[in-house]
Length: 181
Image 1 (tube, rainbow, N blue to C red):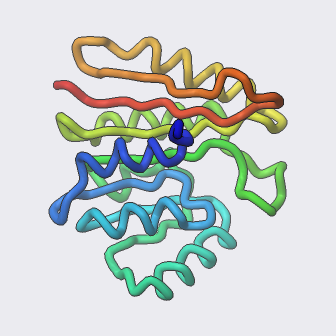
Image 2 (image 1 turned 90 degrees about the horizontal axis):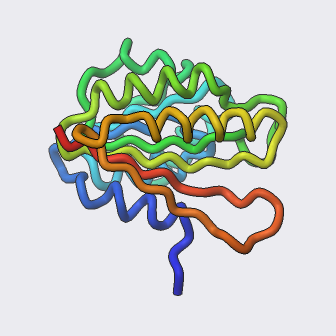
């Protein structure tokens, strides 16, 4: 069976995470990726601008008995204030499911956060970007992120795009980045 983009993103990141790793969840949302990362990495930094996301994630982490996560109520574009080295990062672009769809990630702050994540990324480290673009402003963010990733020097980064081709509407897709040097 063909893997869903989100499942592939987890496999892609799991290959570079271990008990000594530091990981970034740039968009914590409901905390599912935060928990995934916390089960594999030594330290996880999870960002969101919505207090509801932080509270939901905190509850899920407590239920799972995971204590190696710093939950940060701040925009992901400020990640460099909190950390300077990571082995892996995940972004889920769009909005927090089942909440106010007007609160979304934005092209300018997403690109700032992505650049800062790449600056912090260790050689051999990876970034997974799940791009949900079926919302107001989603097409602009999708285009900005694709343009940015396409411009990364191939001598320093390997990039891939994984997306459904025959689905209606605007199915999410995965961008994968690995830092080569």
